[in-house]
Image (cartoon, rainbow, N blue to C red; front, top):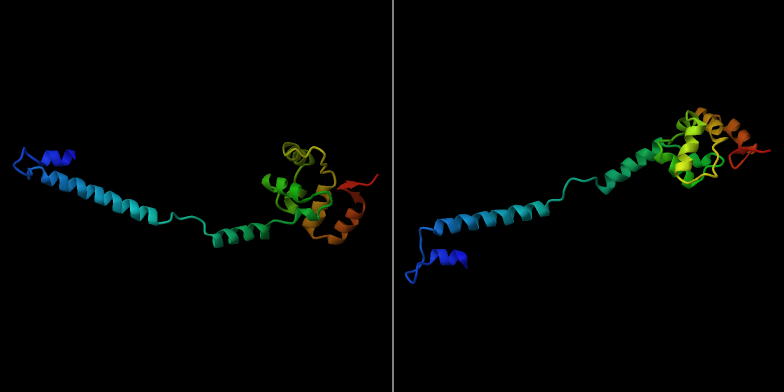
Length: 145
């Protein structure tokens, strides 16, 4: 409305001196609409489901199944993974106190990593016979009393 009033002078018709201003404004609006439409139609680069599956499978390929260790269940394995303990070697090289701190922070105060590190050392070396022999002497990851 304001633009029309600016262009109209009394009853004499449009003021063509300001018509160029209206055309420039309309051009900018049209340009903004087109740019906005193009930006909205383009998807931002994100990790595709296929790429995510590949990176997830890579992580699984390099991580060991810590659940094989007597006393570690799926929930505990996730807690350890979040702390950066993904492989048997990671656990074998960890200090018992540090692992206990990770468990305590996760609210797993009743867990005891006492026998986990010994099992992880054998598993990291690939000594599965020694690993199984040690597990037979454990209950819940601890040596039987």
